[in-house]
Length: 188
Ligand SMILES: Nc1nc2c(ncn2[C@@H]2O[C@H](COP(=O)(O)OP(=O)(O)O)[C@@H](O)[C@H]2O)c(=O)[nH]1
Ligand SMILES: [Mg+2]
Image (cartoon, rainbow, N blue to C red; front, side):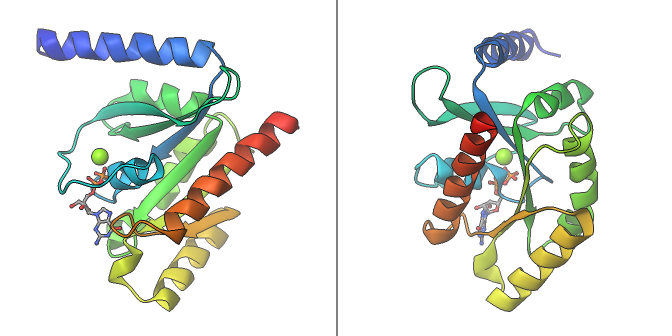
């Protein structure tokens, strides 16, 4: 590994640890490559999308909702945990896992089970959100049927279909759902 890359990894790792130790409410997005994790994440954070995002194994973090330090909700995206097992630690530490798949990509649908397994690895009862992205490329009925079939198969209660390319209701509902689930967890 190149020295610069190694140092970047160390810095991110230190930043991550300090976030986790501060008890932030972490939400992590996982899913196959190119399903739209980066796009969904940027939309939820309120950014405009700017075309292609190079695939980058690793993780990103930004604040989804600011409050006082205990109320901050941080949103993570994690790519490539399959190749880099140490990234699984971040999945294990999150309070909520959001699994994103691409409604037009059968492989990403077939692989949902692997991500569910990673999400339930340490915490059997942790809330999991299942998100069918790229809904703009399929009709509503197909989105609904594919999503509910997958959710039934893996016993997931929080389901959303969204289009990261078209900011609007889907992304907003997803964000509200996540923040609501965080509040419920904190009240429990
Ligand atoms: N049509 C469509 N394309 C999308 C959508 N979300 C992402 N994309 C495209 O899918 C590709 C992969 O997206 P990206 O966010 O980089 O995926 P990631 O690898 O999971 O982070 C990019 O070309 C995006 O522009 C969507 O909702 N609809
Ligand atoms: Mg990405």
